[in-house]
Every structure is written in C-alpha cells, then in structure tokens.
Amino acid sequence: MASRTTTSARLLGRGVHLIMQCRQPSSSVRKYTRSASLIREEAVDAGQPTFETHPELVAPGEIMPGITSQEFALRRQKLRQVVPPGSIVILGAATTKQMTDAVPYPYRQDADYLYFTGCQQPGGIAVIDDRSDLCMFMPEPDPEREIWDGKFAGPETAVDIFGADQAYSSRQIPEILPGMIRRAANIIYDTSCPKPLFWGLPDIQEAKQNHKVQTLQKYSHNLRWVKSPAEIQRMREAADITCQAFLQTMSVSRRYPHERVLAATVEHECRIRGAQRMSFPTVSAGGASASVIHYSRNDKQIEEGRMVLLDAGCELHGYVSDMTRTWPVSGSFSGANREVYEIVLETMKECFKLCKPGITLREIHIKSGLMLSRGLLKLGLVTDTQTLGRTFRSFNPSAVGHYLGMDVHDCAGINIDVPLQPGVVITIEPALYIPVKPNVPERLRGIGVRIEDEVLITSTGHEILTASAPKEMDEVESWLAQCA
Image (cartoon, rainbow, N blue to C red):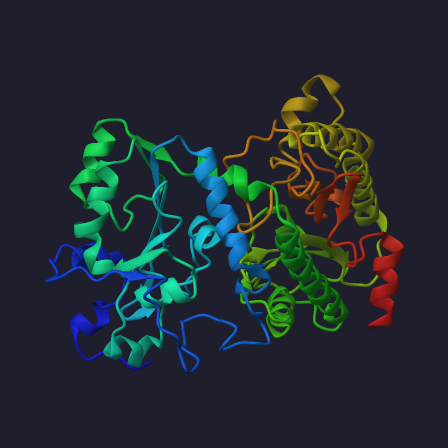
C-alpha cells in the first residue's frame, strides 16, 4: 500500500483528531441551510450511495436504501418528544481506528448516529434540539484528502443529502456548539464513548460537573428497539442473504471439511449477494471447538464423524443478521450427535411457542434452561437434581437470545424483563456445550450444538426470518445428500 507523503496529510480527516482541528479559530462562520442549498446540475459524490450515484440501490427520497428522508425526520421528531424539555442531543460519528500506520480498520458507523442521520462517514457531529430538527458539523472538502480516501460528505452535503436544517464546518464546533450547550437544560450524548469528538469543549466538562449530562442510550434504544416496516424489510433481506450463504456453505462441507474453507465460503456468499460486511467474526467450529462459544480461529480440519457449528451473519445497509446451524460433515446425524442435537432442537421449538407480544426474553430464557436441564439428565451428564442449577452453566453459560437490529446485540439498554412488542426482532439460540473432561462420558465429549434463528415478533405471534435454512435433521441430511 502506498504511504502518504507528510504527517499532516496522514492525519487529515481522521476523526480522532477533529477536536484538535476544531480548536483552531476560523475567520468567519459559514452556515449552510436548506434555503441556501444550490441546485446541482450534475450528480455529486457524497461519499456514500445516493439516488444520483447509485440509482440501483437508492430510490428517490431515500437517504439509505429503503429508508426515506421522511423516516429519518420522524425518528428525530420522536427523539425530541421523549427527551426532557429543553434538552440538546449530541450525536458523534464513530471515529476511525488504525490497524497500523496509514492503514485504518474498515469503518463502521455508530448505530445511533446512523439511525438519526443516515450518514455513514466519520468526522461528523449531529445536534438535535427544540430549535433545530438537525444541525450537522461536517469536515470540509479537502482535495488532498480525496486523493487518498475519495469523496466524502461536507457541510453542503449535510443539507442536500441528509436533510439538515443547518450545517457548519467541523472547524466551527468551538464557535457554535458551546452556545447551544449553554442554553440547554440537559445535554444528552453517548456517555459510554470514552472521548467523543466534542470532548475537549469546556462547556461539556462544566455540564458534567453540574450533573446536566444524560446518557443517550436510555432514549435512543427505546426508539430503535421496535422496527419500522422499512427496517423489517432490510432485516428480511439480510436474513435471506445469510440463509442462502449457509445453504451454499453446507453444500461444500462434505468435500471440504475444514473450518477455514467453510468460514471463507459463508463470507464470500454473503458479500457477493450484496452484504457490505459480516456482522461479527464468523464462528466455524468443528468437533470440540464448538464448545468455545465465540471461537474464531477457524483453522482446523474437521474430523470424520464430527459436526461443525457455523455462526455467522451479514450487514446489509445498516441492518444485521445472525444465525447458527450445526450439522455433521459426514452427511448424517448418528449416535450421540443425534441425541444432543435433538434436545437442542426440541428446546428451540418450545421457545418459539413463547415468542409473542407480552412475553419477555427472561421468560423464554427460563423455558430454555428447563428444557436443556431435562436434556442433561436424559444424557446422564447430570445425575444429582439438587446440584442441577449449579452444574447447568458448565454446559450452557449463555442467554437463549438477544435483541437484533442495527447492532448484533442491539439495544443493550432494554432490559430482558420488558415485554416483547410487535416489531421487535430477537434471536433464539439454545445450545449445549459438552467439554472434553474425564467426568464426561466418552461418547459425549467435545459435542457442541447451537441452533439459532432470527424471530420477528408480530401482532399475532412471531415470524422466523431465517426459516429457509434447514434445521430439522431429515431436512439437513436431505440437503447434504443432494450436494454430495
């Protein structure tokens, strides 16, 4: 990879340095507004897909594929309605992270910033208060940076594309933002971020000392938790891509029983179907590796007679998928593999029956624990019912599921005791992880089974978004036989 010629060029545009740039006073304040936005005679590259540059992805009136400017405006309106009167909400774009000198990690936008603005690029700050629907501070266009990193959104783009009422250069943050902060009754931002782009402003520090700061997630997660019809459609598409990728991966597993090959296959199949990235590091765990919940080495040959656990998901235009299947690379379930798999599958089916409005994730988790505990007794892994509660975690220390949306573990601020509502998407993923230990019957050692589906809660019950990937044993065996 080519290296930049100067240190200043290398640092230019890195979000982590924005606040340093902002402290440099500007000679004048330039304000961009909707009324001042110019009519363009040619398509402008905004640094992300737009209708003008990517009509095959983005329809007229959309900021992101399938999500209109009106929906983004409605999200901001709802946010203003739920925060205390007189509050200011400050959203910071995710900062870039460096892999090594001049080589950044692939960029992924902060979910809250993306949810309320649609901007997929670093370096920006968005402000929402009772005086403005959306005020954005954006990096100024820079020809030298564009040589290295390509086009990116500036203040004018914030007005033209993202629908900001007003926009300024990010260099003007010290001149504009402090006044907005001082007149606010509460300052709301992501307090979990160690050093947001506006961290260096004295007014932020003063607001913290005066206990005027509130965390953004207590408001944003409640809004993001229930998905709109447009969001559900994006999640359907991401789930469908993942199901197709799993089918293709299962089809090669008998010929190429290697963790690396299967991981590469599922990732390739997701990307060629339109996914921007994987949702998380792929877990391709053969044999005893399946007992490591977040295993990601993916570097072993899968032994004959063993199963493989594949946990993967993709991200499509801001929304993620997450599913797991476990299957025998030989093509047929047999012996202990079949026994353990059947217990997990039956547990999953019982959990599905609870997936409806009014039920909580905790209730589903309790049901899963009861079913799996009975399975442990049946397998002979536990003989003393008095100690079952303590020993159960040795075979499954994880929850039965989580919320899903723009992040894999979405809306972590929503308690698992909150009753589910129509439009909420969860995962159901019961599992048993049997370690290789002397006190475990030899025939069961090293068997790990997890089956995971995405479940949309509906007004009448639920819909399994990942149902097209087989999980019934006869269906799995039939598909593997067809692909042999």
